[in-house]
Amino acid sequence: MPAFILCVICLITTILLALTNQITFGPKLILEAAALKATQQELFPAAVDFLPMDIEALKAQYPSVESVIVAKSADGAIGVVIQASSRGYGGTVPVLVAIDKAGQIVNLKYLRNDETPGLGKKVEDKLFYGQFIGKKTDKPFTVKPNESGKVSIDAVAGATISSRAVTEAINATTSVYQKISAEVK
Image (cartoon, rainbow, N blue to C red; front, side):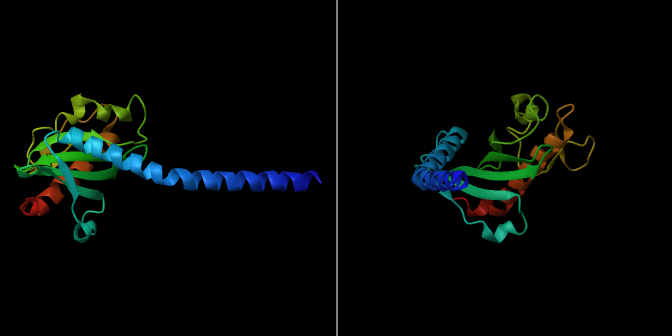
């Protein structure tokens, strides 16, 4: 008898959890979309609309790039917001990179990641990511000193893997921007 009661309790709990998931799934998606729009607006405050761009053809060449969003003002496109990620020390490090029509990185935002608090998370400090702001997208970035043909970025001491992950993600966004810049109108 106790086993039967326990099974009934487990069954009722499972049904209630499934029902709760069904009820909250739609509002959760709406909240996530609103949060993403707010983040995009933060990257391009002058934009009035954000339109996703089809990048399926680029996915094979740039698997780390997840989305490209065109930021538009009343006068037309003002830039793009590209989301990419790369493997860091604690997992993937996703970033949103805002690039204006002139091919210059104007802003950068980190999304949720599992980098080590107090060490790997230091890549989220403006002291590190500020090195990318204002730079053109025509040359790749590197955290390795004296690498020719690339823009040198100072890595966070003790967080080289995380610094490299951010740099690789940003390099993916700048490469994609170079491919699609003529389409941004």
